[in-house]
Image 1 (cartoon, helix red, strand yellow):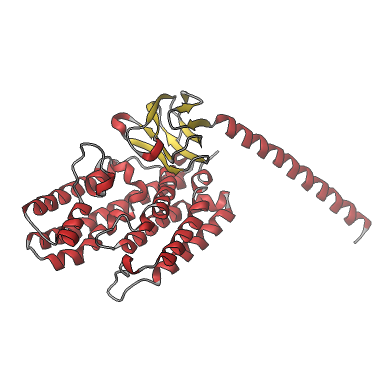
Image 2 (tube, one colour; image 1 turned 180 degrees about the horizontal axis):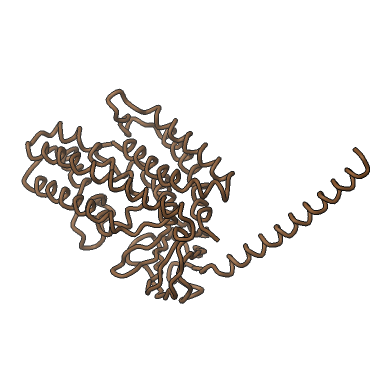
Length: 382
């Protein structure tokens, strides 16, 4: 190398190091600014302490610390207890973070020690107009609308599937009703990442008996599931419940065009859903009578993956390593599920899946959930 080239290379290297140093300093400053802007939530068994009760609309970070002895949940509620964002299964002594888009208005932050009841609540005010990330990046706006279209397609396909399930119930055809139960749920399970945006549809259609709130009537799929598999009977009450299920799902179908969906709610919802799979559904508690849990898992993974794929153009640009990891983890869990696929299109009955195999599923879901928890932050435009 000539002296001139060595001199030029040295100058370029010096410039590169200086630029990297400045970028590092700027990044640290940005990180510190983001940390100082975060709303800190300290949850205990008896309190829900919020560091700020007023903050600007737009992108909001909630840094949660569970300092109690019970597993807790943290929710942000709007009018009528409409869920704006949430994080469940926060263990004692652990921390969690939520990235969300919140519009101006009055809200409540609720901590739920033991994950039951209305929670310990703190009123907050979100001020100003606050632009959302979707408005700042048209790709995110397109992703939101594409997911809305996906949800609408799933709902539109669910109605005839549920009507066929209900027709079998009304015809007193127990065997046929059982065979149509899991397919009738696929569309709903695929859209669970944004289920909270549909209001009261989830508790009406998909609540398990032991998850009922005080005074709540048990309706929906799982009540019918118990009648079909445990009671082995179809009576007038079951037929009325079946009609109510169709009506409630048609209400869901109508709500989708106006449902409040954001890029961060898609990302957070996908993460929350897989957390639920890993901690609760993996035990077989959801489809405890029919044992069609793997059908649900597949639909849940498909819905979460759809959310990720729509957000991927932005996420991969901001965090290419995260996108690479998510691509790999989704491929692995899909390959694992494929091993249990049956010739008729369904899955192995979950009561035939051993504890060791369930542990493998749990590990795979947790392995996916960890990088997925970073997706919301990766699509926030700063």
